Image 1 (cartoon, rainbow, N blue to C red):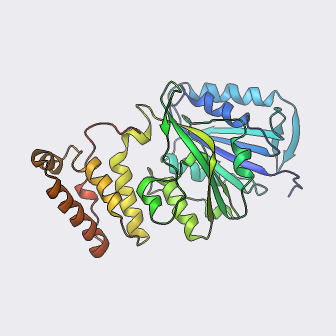
Image 2: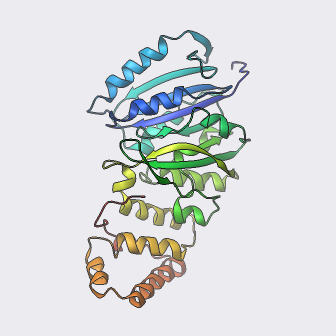
Image 3: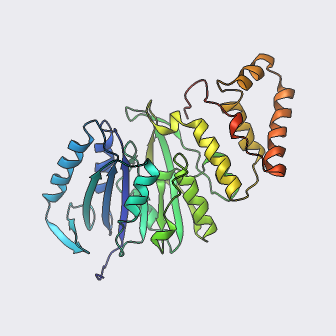
Length: 321
């Protein structure tokens, strides 16, 4: 093992057909400023667009800078903003984003104890984003800041509803914007995710870390990332799958569902869905009837552990923040 004077931050980007945005993501990572090394790993799911060409050119660009350090066989290049950047990428078939992340986690250097991922359509908002989080990080912790939703052209939409999470409200509103977090881990085993959760792998990880005794700290004074919403983004198109996976995760961990979460599911994926139940509730449009059904759903899940997923249907319109 090498003696490392400065911490190594492992950043992973799972990628698939985001050639329009990925260069912004890449630049925002390697331009981070601070007294740390960045081990940057891109796991591409065998994109059919121009992503591979962009990654190849970016790798050549990073490699053109002088090697400042070699750690466990990886060369770290001095780009000027930090202590050094190692960049590597793979493009191969995978089973989705969760699988790509697990593959990257297995590649984390033994010398690294800091990790997060940033998707190929998101970006760090400032050059001191990572440094702002690292300042508060401690062993077995998740430190996170704010995030801003942006559109496909990079225009600000609104602020992500970040909160100091606990084991209840984390299910209600996804209180952590995933690209705005930094995990200080003690073992790589803590980071691996369940392939069953392809839409809420970040929520799965937060719950897993909660149960493993990690401390969660919200730094509300800093905006860390830009969270992009566009036509092809998973956030905009996977609402029904997201809610189904939330229900499965709550059942798995024996969590109680809150009325707030039930209402959200009802309005988005039952009343607002394309299924027959949605047509029924929209036809009557009765607040008392709606409230009664929400209460029925809440009791069915919490008292009888009844999985409500089969009642959900795709929303009539795309979700937007």
